Image 1 (cartoon, rainbow, N blue to C red):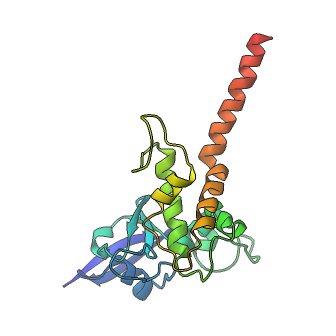
Image 2: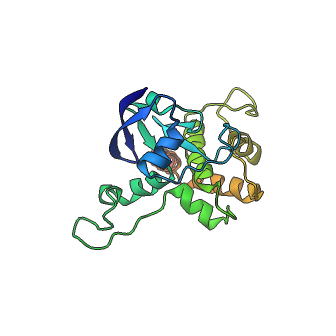
Length: 210
């Protein structure tokens, strides 16, 4: 049985008819041509197929495409497109002036490059997308299984390892992956905004004290 669905993938609306048994992973790779989510285990155990659906991390190999009708799905390719702007999303390779456009990297992608957090690269798209989702959960103050105390969690190595534990790396680049996630957290807009708020408050306090 086929069903017509519309899914916004990496900023582009996609309309297609899919068998109700088709997974989101197969729809992305085989029907739409978005191949950054990888088919690793196809059983929801490796995390290579991780994408964001409505801003939340999901395993696309365990998610039926029909459940994504009307949703926003972001892959590793879409993270770069968000930085570069809407012209890049249409795949014309040019900016608004007709010149060759350069696709920027999301802070998490840049951190993976800076920290050499990959080897073969097969799991990297899923790792990157999962890290983006994990950092968003962390910014919202959501605890993990290793969060200590009732206060806001601290992004130490154990916290990152727990939040990224659903993503396996056959090359065992885990040490650098954890470092990259922590670096990306430092560079996130939410973190910069919080740091700026603290700095502004310190200036205000100094003005009152003066």
